[in-house]
Amino acid sequence: MSIIILFFILPIITAAIAKSKGRSFFGFYVYGFLFFPIALVHALIMVSIKPTVDLSAPAPITAAPVAPVAPVILRHVAKAGRALQCPDCGTLTGEHSMACPKCHYSFITGKSHTPTIEMLNV
Image (tube, rainbow, N blue to C red; front, side, top):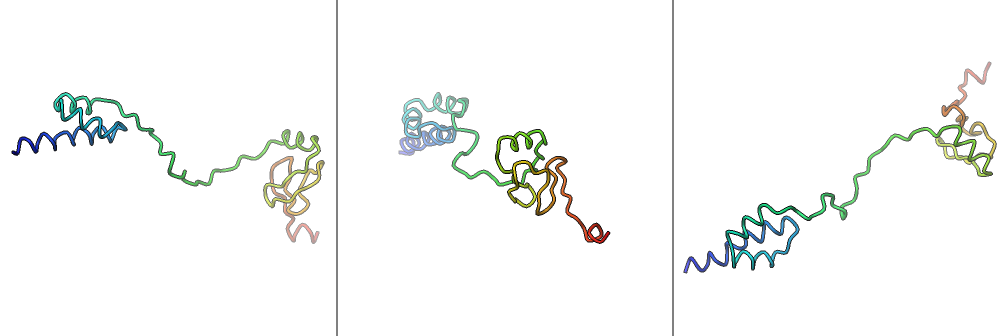
């Protein structure tokens, strides 16, 4: 009686290993039921067909540093007749602006030149 139970339970091991590698649980259960030793070795040495990256999970959000845009590209955008957007404050400026009128970010050097009180009182 216990041998009959083993014939039905041992193929579950083969099927579980195959399922963890992306294969059919039922197919390997039948394979393990008919040829248990061969099916077990086959399930252990076969290559996984599961994708290595879980595409259903959302990607982690990380703050990546933003590289400054080269002045040549900004000049090209200005020549194309589009407004420039300041990367510091987001203000849209004219197509030939060299600096942001709100925060004084320089589109040429890529540096913010916000005037200080000492500069204004000179």
